[in-house]
Image 1 (cartoon, rainbow over the protein chains, first blue to last red):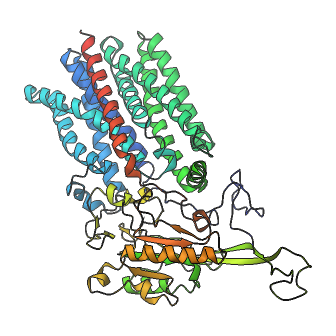
Image 2 (cartoon, rainbow over the protein chains, first blue to last red; image 1 turned 90 degrees about the vertical axis):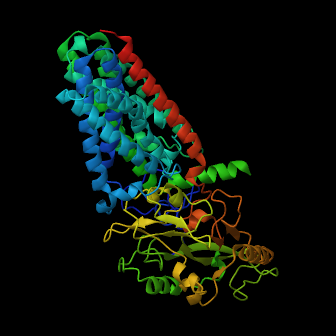
Image 3 (cartoon, chains in turn red, green; image 1 turned 180 degrees about the vertical axis):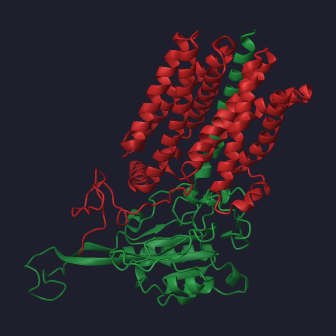
Length: 320
Length: 272
């Protein structure tokens, strides 16, 4: 009795209560300071991935349609519709009161990325649907073209607003990464959309997808490195730690490896159907793994009070 | 209107927890022992809107100047400078009703709103349980209730204020540790109180969230603490996440524009 309710900032085995108070930081019995999101796995990480694929595919479809890549345009539009439909199911399912999903459109609040996103989805969804249906049935081609262009305009918004959504919280590993996250998400989305094209369309007809995949994967890799680099430099406590340790760290490293490998495959094995398809599939899987990893890293940073307390205390002390 | 919680006079009776639950018909949410001193409530949640924290600390008290122990002669060695002691910190935690409230800013349905008293309240019949408010709160206050899927937190007894009554917890508090009133009055009172404590030798006494210039624009509920905020489980320097949102949108816009231009251009650039 009589010991400060403190916790070491270093490694701690589960269930062990340190008996020695440490000088690094204090917490209230090691309890979290903020509350972690109640968003479910796989629903929300899946949505981050699916929204990215959908949005970037719509943009790719718009370009492909205008320059006559019919097969690619069809695959991209169908892929966008499939992905965004699954997204809607995941999002509604994740609500605490799913029957009230329509309350998302009760107000429009620019201060809420979720409000902006809900409105984006409400317009993008039907428009992407119209584009895909017109493409597949061949009906109303003019309307189909308009829908394709509209979806192409809104799609990138869908692919990137989710970065603002997760960063606009008190979750340390997300919030402090807000400057890089939109580029990670855009790159990951482009990579996945390009990957879909590489997987489903023969190489001769998939050039734009290959280009987008190469560019997207490169942007994603660079932006992710920038993100980790910035988070590592946080005052007093590296916020990159949750991204680099444990299962999450392993999955993110594997995703990076897959992306890099697929990038090489796309660049070098452009003419081979097998290599293209393998690259495409790898990019899709890697994009999904990256979203999952980012999600889990955030959750871990919310659970451990050190990620909230140490940077804030360090910056307070730095000012005195 | 808001709360000034003077934790230096809290006796840890938990009348505030009970009164809050009774008045608001908040469901029971756990009857276990935590091992965290007398704190078996553990933290704020959807079904706990007042939470009393208990911290047992070693404390060193200055000995009497003539070397005799404070507890009487013979307790300390002659010339001892200090006496080993224990001190008990007790604090009733609550929603801070931030002037710049992240939960309110991020709520996509408009369920969370600012009342005419300056407090932050959730409209339960609008909330669809999206859960965005939960990670947005820098203090970990608001939460989603499993039983009904909605987000719940302290209402600062909105229904009582409307009838000219003070909140249930302030009414029940036997020591007036929880004080309710207009914020400017409370802030003046708190400043005087903290000065008194400093003069009495309590150097660690500090106001928390009393400054309108702080990271949340000042709390509608602010505190007098006897140690650093993190000792009580509070963030040392919370900043509302919305402050960075304009910059976030800027980066999103650039990334989205880049993606749009790139994807369309790549499609166009390779004419078949």
